[in-house]
Length: 165
Image 1 (cartoon, helix red, strand yellow):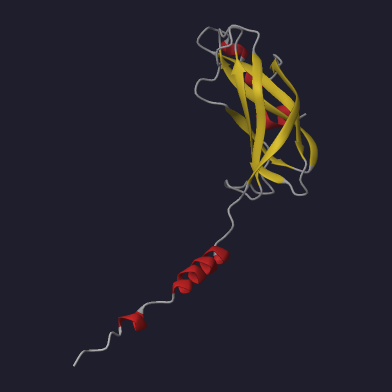
Image 2 (cartoon, rainbow, N blue to C red):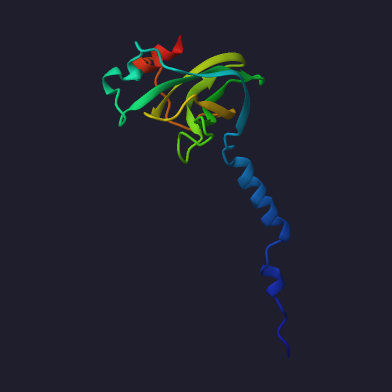
């Protein structure tokens, strides 16, 4: 007498795997989406000699020169964009990149909706042939924090205070 084939009874329903996957995705936290922001009115100029970043005591070929990259960033969304980074290609008079192997020039933190001004201090190797220029300036942030956040009572560093105004 032949044994009945009961293997089919123990196979899970194929739709069960799809249902389990959907449930897992629905319960997983949503990743912070990246947001591209518009950048305009960009300028690059040497830091004032009174700026602590200018390092007047280091005026020698092995030192660095301080430059300020300033501009306006526009957040067209309805929510603030957080942990925003600025990217740019900084080039010397011959068109060579000044900041080797990097286009991220700094972070401007949180950007509220609408227009906001920003300023970043750049350290450029002394002796770089000027004038310096910039290309492809972009800003990119996130809909949720991706870095450790400073507390509400934390103050800006003196360098951040000097460039903020």
